[in-house]
Length: 131
Image (cartoon, rainbow, N blue to C red; front, side):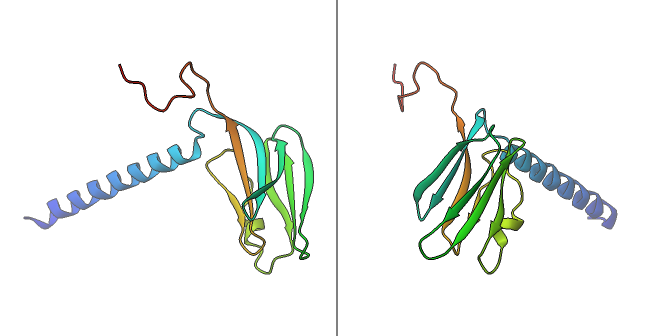
């Protein structure tokens, strides 16, 4: 096999891998047919806040041990505005506009998610249809 054909094949493999990665990223950024409508915040698995994504607001999530997270909703996005944890990674996770991302503050066990209204159809409560 010549060296030139090897280079050409390498470039083809790289191009295919990049196209596949781009397609997977695009799919992950879509909310798969759901309309984002609610911001849901849980602390240690228990829901503590549910607000419409369309309504701007600033919500303090305070815990008995002194942990504090501030969630901000504006312009159809949600983000962690403040947190008194040591690392502040939850703040650096940025704005979230669809259900493809989740904001997590591990030290405080806080999870911020966007939930959407799932499209309804006539068999929405069925798992399987057998004919």
